[in-house]
Structures are given as C-alpha cells and as structure tokens.
Image (cartoon, rainbow, N blue to C red; front, top):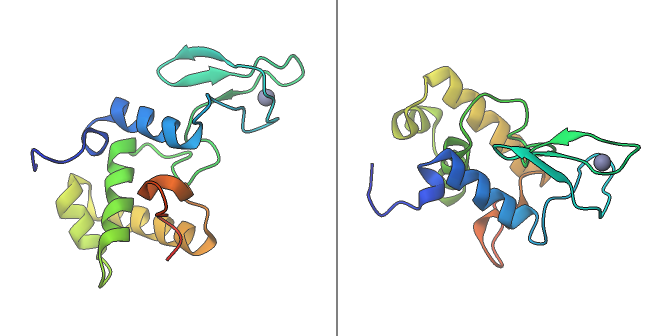
Length: 136
Ligand SMILES: [Zn+2]
C-alpha cells in the first residue's frame, strides 16, 4: 500500500470522518426528516435524530451508494476514486487486486458506483472543491 495514500483510503474511521465532513459540513442532518435539530451521537458514527416524531438512527452511509453494505467505507472511497480517475475505465479485476476484496465484491462495487455516477447519486463533492465523483 502506497504510504502517501490519503488516510481516508486506508482506515474506516478516517473514511467516515472524511465523508461526514463533505456531506455535512455544518454537522449531521437526519436523512429521514431533515430536521435542523442537532442529532444525538450514539457511537461509532451512528446518530439518533433528536426530533421527537422521528428518532431515526442513521450514519453517513444512509442515502448513499454505500448504504446497506458490509464493505468497509475506505474501500468504497478508494474504489470510487479509482473509477473516477481512470481515463480508460478501470476493471473489476483491478479493483479486486488493488483494494483487496474478492472479485465478486469488486464487481458489485464497480457496478454500484457506475450506476451512481450515471444517476449523479454518489456524494457529489467527493472529488473535492469544484470536482465531482459523478459529474463528468
Ligand atoms: Zn429525523
């Protein structure tokens, strides 16, 4: 693994904080009701909505392509980055080798990320200011 690779590509916790920062620059927002009330931090990136009619539990993954997946978040971010930065289009096989997931998982990730890129559903600011993972 390249030592100069950003921490959010190597570590689940850094990946979560990175994603939270770009998705919620002013603090977590409940994806279900969208209340502006500050949610309770439960633990490990899990929040509970403080709106008395909602009380939903959520993480930064909810409402993104990373939702309902057991794949570590930093692996998702790296796969999305690789897919976005590759001009010719990266193959599932390369994702499998580079990220260290099974070929089947790599295929699933590639498929899901590509679909999200088409729909513009992937976190749009992920590429940093002015650049989007989704917008070509
Ligand atoms: Zn809520």
